[in-house]
Image 1: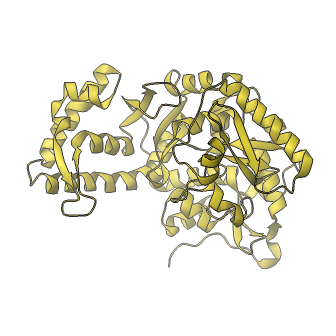
Image 2: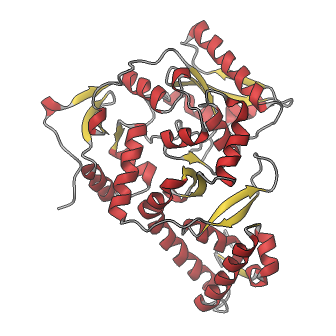
Image 3: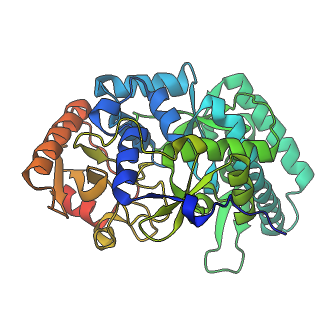
Length: 405
């Protein structure tokens, strides 16, 4: 019999409506002014993970949640590259995230191992097929060991720098031979990605400013090997603490796990089922069944970046993102762009114009003048700490393109 999530009798199930979910979000995600954090590390721990595919997202997501955003860039850089209290690494769904460093072992064991095994097998298959057997597993093992040794000596290095130390990284092979997507790749482009998924290397300092998408690699700090089930229950406990109530579908989507693993982890943390406005069942931790002690947050507004962990936190999004707004706010692959929030709901989007000024537009004007005043203040706050730096989202959406001109 397959494991199932915790059950409760219908009479014992508490109902958590959309309004309460939005109040919980304001506090747990540090979006209302009173809930803002003092440090980037506190923000990351509250959210569990910050999307790192677009480097600028990390800084913008943190800045939106700091009580004093003026030193966002300096403090995030120090956390990532000096004291290493934050680490950028592959995690759920083969996606790059920034985590608190103490979570590296949990993320690696709960999600990384399975993804890494598939990535390694795919690399070995592709280089063998694409080189007509010239590049063997034994050959790759030698190149890999040599590249890691060179990276250890250098401390941090770009792929181009590593190819000076280990020229075999430049060996080409044909990917997708005979397919419409056939292309020539180099071993380095795939190997470093696989080593990243395996938790053996991590992304280091960017080559340019904090908005740069080019970066150096570094040997990843060591971490203990954890039992997979323990790591999965730990990760789910942390995520439910930040994002509960959440449905089984939300959990399966966010983690990338099999539904059986989700159900085992729900049982391990004694998750409590609750009913939601959409007619579905959500889950919360045992100490989070009752409404937050602080009650509803004061009215609040936020300007969040594309791929923000709040906007991308759930698969089922109707309670905070009305379906009619989505065509303007998402790209064709399901990536959300910069969003304007009012009291726990997405009500519009924002961008920077050619001169770097923050511009925004309501797609839902139900908040009236109070919402407009609050959003205007947040736009001014964001403009002040950006201080003329222009950030273009990696995944551009219709409204962001229109507003940016």
